[in-house]
Image 1 (cartoon, rainbow, N blue to C red):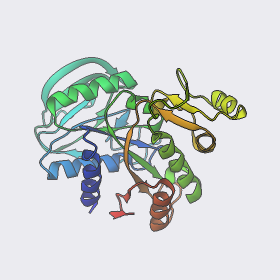
Image 2 (cartoon, rainbow, N blue to C red):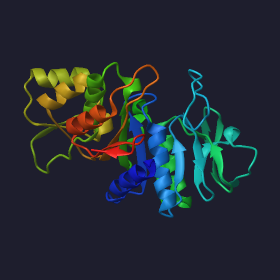
Image 3 (cartoon, one colour):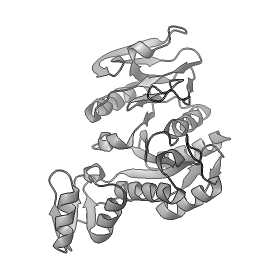
Image 4 (cartoon, one colour):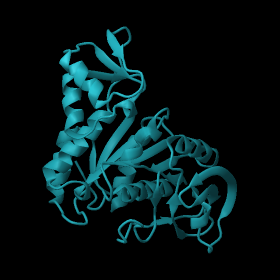
Length: 297
């Protein structure tokens, strides 16, 4: 069952000593919500009722963009969520904990405690600062926080002490090789190591952009290239891999990437599950899980 996979990921995350976890993805429909649900179920089974929120919108029955079915979030009593007030179910009622001035795509953000088993939608703040505020607030009400994230908003990881799980899958790539290359690049980018004290370095104020990276490579820069944290590396895909192979990129505040999950079935294509699982594990060097097939590599 996917609960066993969720339990394994939760154990890896808790081993980092963090009290929050972000699930980010290489693209849309790559299993972020299913991964979040598996970790959530593991928390419930362990007697740890977490706080949940989302960067964007998750848990709706139908995708607002393409009208396709979406994975639902069935929540247990005691769970705390940060979501838009306008998407709360009218029945059963939830316990209102706090109102927030933060706005979401569906109205003001509220903090509520689930009082009866039900399906819920999560619509969280669209900004990095808003997400950090929501995570801090959720920690007041819950011992652990899980965030359904998005690759185009990884800035929300900046300044936080979170475990990170990366989701990848068939929906975000044309071929299995492309899917593996995409997740390898993202994991490599997010796993940039801390700069060694006293090491010769050049510090980048702001983001390491393609233009700056190209200039440093042309100059055959041998010193460590230091950014504040991995979210400041504004490179993706093959460009990221190329730059990270040529430059010794380091950061002041590393992230805690603990696992990768794979989804072999997409809306328009599918890959052989075992082949994707093992290829991603080999390419990233990370514990890798198929939350659908309950397999690990």
